[in-house]
Image (cartoon, rainbow, N blue to C red):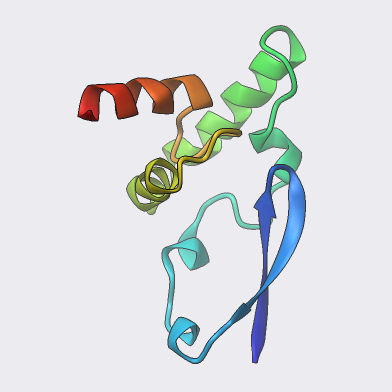
Length: 99
């Protein structure tokens, strides 16, 4: 049995991967794997938070699974953090346009 650590709301969560999950998953190829998760969850809307957001988006920009990540965040309604190169506000706008 394999366990994976995912970051949810800035905290590590260990999830057991089932036999079916043993096959590759888009997260296996994410450019952010191994990055400091704090970068993807800036606190605030100015100063250092904007620098963190820019750093997270730069990592996402070169990611081969960026679209999968964004689709997951939209489907899950992820309210926090940078996912698929988008901020929470950018994802809210995308959801509104899709509605």
